Length: 162
Image (tube, rainbow, N blue to C red; front, side, top):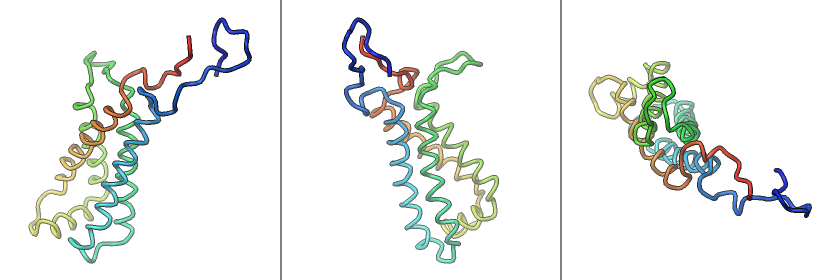
């Protein structure tokens, strides 16, 4: 950190608190915490729905939702689309990211997700229903991360005492 301007002392200016709004660190921490909660919920509920589920799938879902929370938290810096030149409020940005992340998960683990849908609903529906789930979870994570950590460019800038 730089010294504050106009001060002859050797003290450095520091933020009042690491968790002052707006803060990218708070956004990522909140995102990971909420993602971890959803991951733990899935981890412990999966055996009740699908007893023969692979333990690696359970661990993968736990880590997946923790990562999804971190990604949604990080993308809070972008509140404007540079190509479309449109604002990106959190309630648009977060569901798109959550849905996209679960689309990628379903795309690469289609068979496991299909088996999970059959075990959960009892009928063979498309496993791409997980995209909707990801959008809903992304919306929840994005809302809480924005509420607690702010959004936009200010979350990534270092605040220096004037």
